Image (tube, rainbow, N blue to C red; front, side, top):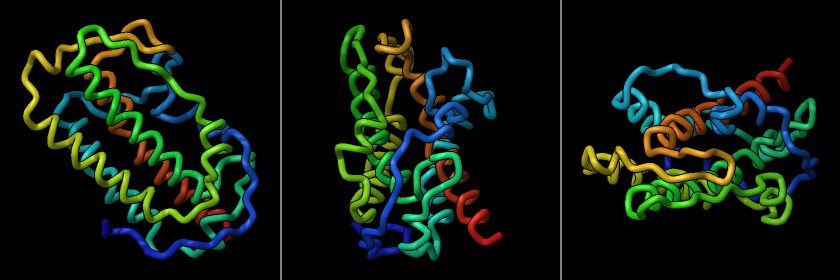
Amino acid sequence: MPGPWPSDHSGSGAWALSWPRYRSRSAAAPPAAGVIRRRHVNRAELIEHYRTGIADLADALAGITDEELDRPQEGGEWTARQIVHHLADGEAMSFTRLRRLVADDQPVIQGYDEPVFAQRLHYERPIDTSLAVVAAVRASSLELMGVMTPEDWAKVGTHSEHPRYSVDLWLEIYAGHVHDHADQIRRARAAARV
């Protein structure tokens, strides 16, 4: 699937894998940990922020080289390549979570071990397919959100890391996830130019 990102990032440069300290500052972290930054006050703003995530990621990756994709970051944070694959895995999880929340009664949403995914799912591979996953999942979830009823929005389940996991909480978490990681990529690229 073509997208608004650079193509042919097939380099396999060396990369150091360790759980990024960034996680503790991310909007993707569990809200119970107090890390959600309330940048938006209503659902419409959150949906718009969610919608613009893929364009923000494309902007952060514009002109990126394989060397930049694989450059180890200070403090053990993920490389840009690892971030893209993490986003694809996170979006795949978000796709299932939203659908389970809307379709199932009182679903139990399972968390996943992000560092293990990064290690075992070979985050050194090319990024084009993962970028396509992020774009496709976001487009599909936006389409679903566009037809959801008030009853759908009121649905609640539980999460292995939260006692109460609602559709609105799902949106609050994922609206900023891609933006936060796009900013992380920008910071890494800027630091490398200094």
